[in-house]
Length: 213
Length: 314
Image (spheres, rainbow over the protein chains, first blue to last red):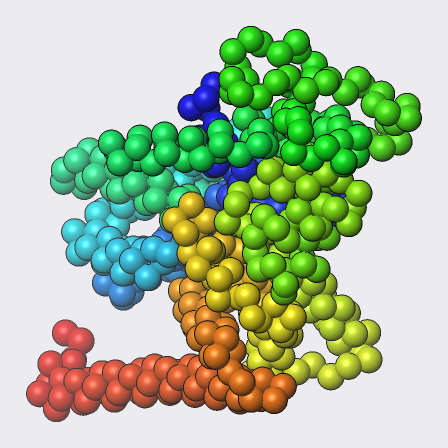
């Protein structure tokens, strides 16, 4: 117990919630503010909005890269249609981000370049390659959204009703893109499974990082 | 690691040498009967240990858990003297908040020290042993002060925003808004300006850095939020970094400013904000110039392809 006093040094400044808020010794005023549940739910909300924003931003760049290469081919209208939907998604998350005062991920410039390179690179493998990339990415994103929906429902479906609605709608549209990709011979791409695994690994890493930094 | 262990032992010996018992644990929201004990003990501050942890009130004191030279103090009952019970219920955090707020009055005289906290506790009618609740270097007092200033700033900015929304005030241009917000925040330091360098050095102690950094970043984010920043790209970081730089440098200038009413500081601040605006304008210009150049090159490439006959669709 004598040595236990030493950790008292650290415990004197209680652990700060990850989200923003008044300082550690803000006193009763902070606890009595309407967002008193901030300490628990705020980090979750921040993470979700941050990673989803990064995801839609990346998806935008992927389609931009694909259009840059295949912009004059027969699949161009299809890719353009999917790209337009992703733009809508990004706009929605931009709004949510501002409304909830969430910070964007630091890695945005990196996803900017990486997404474009992935899109352009997969398109250089041909139309089937572009579709394969779409399938891989959209499958990752659908799974990710499903996980988020599960988490939010477990937490508090009432509180997150609006967010749940948004995510469910977006998940359905991403699933649609996935199915479009499959319809257009994605699986006929040479080295399809290798490509798919590699892209999905990259997506998982991107999700992990964007949630945290 | 060994050095840390040695420091710990030395530190513990120092603590044991004090006549005040430190809290072993800090459950921030537990009902603190010690407030009653403190009021009761206000005349005997050095004579008995202040049994701080609420756990020790509910359990019988485990033998050997107290340092040997301190006799076990009397256990205040649940009701405490005068039958105080739920009416005087106050969480530990609230009590600390009150003590620290009261202590701020004595900072210009005593600095950010345990003496100031002790004086503050005395004005509240508590034992000066209350200073034992806190670190001897005044960390909590300083962090409390910074947090309170940030809260005041937020409220001020929110009020101003409401006035603008109601149409009773003009919306300020960004540079003026930032300048006013930083100036308002720095003016809160003026009563404590003599002792502020000491506070800054304490805030830079490794164990305080997470908290002080957190307070700084949330303040800067608040200012940008009320300035109307809605960026969702890397600009979010650039703007906050620039404003943090402006704030920190202006604070340092203020510390050694002896002009009347700190006018040198405010002039420095205005210049830095103007620099930042210029920089951002320049950045925008560079970007649009870059885009124009790229367009020009693309146009030249297409022209050359046309001239060389490579652009025909076969």
